[in-house]
Length: 119
Image (cartoon, rainbow, N blue to C red; front, side, top):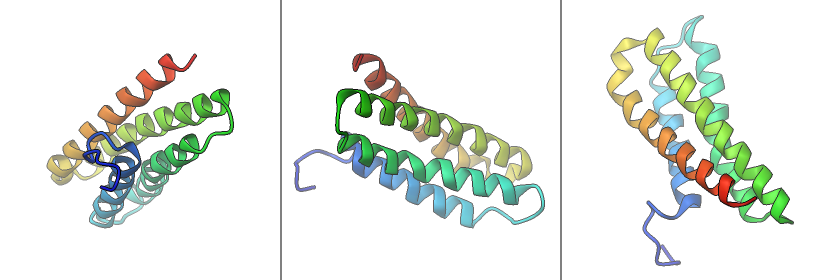
């Protein structure tokens, strides 16, 4: 990293990796009438976290920053939901899903803390 931060504390990198891992995970989900919409929703939510964090990083005002962080918070929480639904549809994916779910939870907690502090 050029800024000297580990990826654990570099939210731009961490959210990008989260999105990449969501894509890889979704590519391995068996496609059927139940999983197809869940995959679409998870890819949208999981990749949106990083995109909105980038927008927050370039916010034009404090309110704009808080709004974009709020979206990151919502999208990470939504990711947790769709990961859970995919596990219901494909129980064999529980172990891989658990890793993603924990990361989504950690990101949600981080963004929630930032959101609260930026009042």
